[in-house]
Length: 89
Image (cartoon, rainbow, N blue to C red):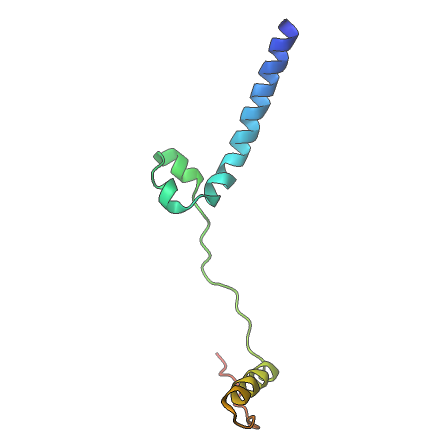
């Protein structure tokens, strides 16, 4: 009997530890309109990290020429031969 109680207690402690470890990740997956209804300390667990800027890739002249050729062919025009270079920052 004591052994069963000990195993049950160990299982409960491990289960609570796993739930506590996974709770912040699970709360971040919940939409913010539902998290807003939870108590304040639980809302603090659900805070997402904000990204200041999204990564972007500069357009190459080859990619620009392919895009212009696709637009020109869709409009029934011959493809442009001169492509202005993208502005530099």
